[in-house]
Length: 166
Image 1: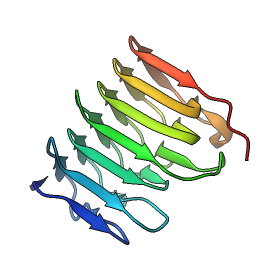
Image 2: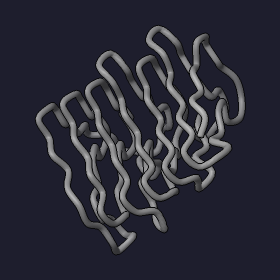
Image 3: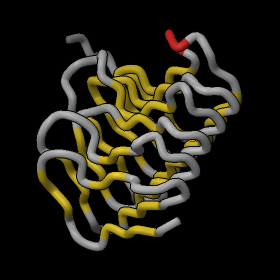
Image 4: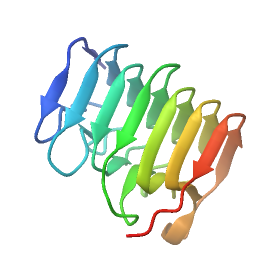
């Protein structure tokens, strides 16, 4: 279990961070940008369990962050933002996907994916809360075609769907 911190900008092709062990955490500090310049996710969860991604700065990429390990946690703090740049509504910015369970998502900042699905949940025992803003072509999809789903999503913030057509 290791705590990693992005203390300076990390911009380039490929994954910008990969969780190496169960229980690891990665925090993008305020004022720091972590961005992938080619297609795909900036962060690889690599199927690890009990990992936590905390975004207090900015994370930019085209798509596909799969929180695919049990008890994966993604937290966007106040002032933090995750930005999706893909131009296809078939892409998803953040996915809690099978076979994982017990995922957690909290947003007090901004999750924006103007031409994408913002948050997609297809796991059991998921808990999500939004006190910030989620803005996407399809902001939140619970269950979807995964055929499973369970848990709760509580919104006390803003969820905005735009009219994107590709």
